[in-house]
Structures are given as structure tokens and as C-alpha cells.
Image 1 (spheres, one colour):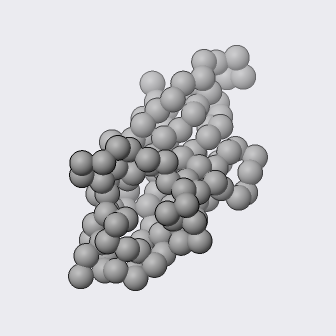
Image 2 (cartoon, one colour):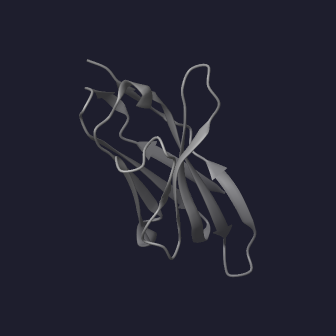
Image 3 (tube, helix red, strand yellow):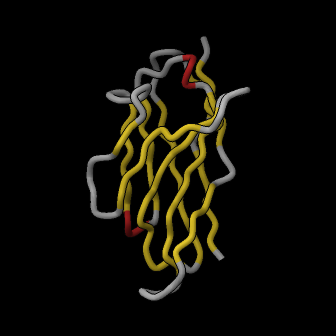
Length: 123
């Protein structure tokens, strides 16, 4: 069994910065992809950023390129999303999404979602 737990949501003023984290726990051999998605009210869930196991530079949605930075600590099965110069349109529930191989080198690979954490950007 694998669980993802996000933390760091809150209320931020426009132009401010905030950092989210997400940690996976359970029977984990390796986390291949760590990603962040977000969903605003009335909108579809969209990918914000993702980072592969061996990479150091993530891929980003155009709307956050240059403002957000994804990073990961493989030893802790944790990913971080540093958000700078936040805008009201960044307001959403943010979800982490991992591709995980469980148990050992021959274990199954599955996708997991966190429960989400609210980020609100408002004066």
C-alpha cells in the first residue's frame, strides 16, 4: 500500500512565494515520475510540473514557466514545488501525482494521487 501526503497549502498575497511538498510512504522500490497538478473551481485538472527520477530539470506548463520550480529528494521519496511571483490565477487545489514501482525491482508500477492542498492567492 502506498500513500501520498501533501503539505504547505495556504493563503498567499499576489507576488508572494510559497512552497509545497509531497511525500510518498509505503512499500516503495522507486518513484519514477513526480508531478504536480492543479485544479481551479470549474476547471479541469492540469499538469503544472513534472520531474523524472534521473533528471534535475523539470518540465512546466507555460503558465508557470519561470515562476515555479519542481525538485525532488529521492532518498525521502519527496517532491517540492517552489512557487514564486504568485498570481490570483494560481489559486487552485494542488495535487501531487507519482509513478511508483512497489516492493522491489520486479514489483508492479502504479500511479498515485495525493488528496490535494489548497493554495489561494489573494490580497
